[in-house]
Length: 99
Image (cartoon, rainbow, N blue to C red; front, side, top):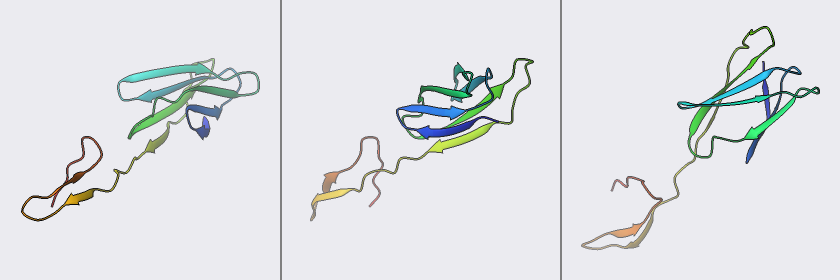
């Protein structure tokens, strides 16, 4: 089973040497191969809220169990600028504000 060691700008992980590592994000698939030390990395496709699954495939085509990880980005707090007859303020883009 593959491991994810780091989830920053790059996904960095471990798998058996020579295994193909497949990362699925939505309808997209990203592929890399673990080097002789079992190290692998790729640009992290998970830049917003969502989930990915990661599998390793050996040279015989055997697939590991899927490793799942998710990223949840909490919206910024709403800031009320004026209150009274009309309330106005700011919030993160595409955020629904319920009063």
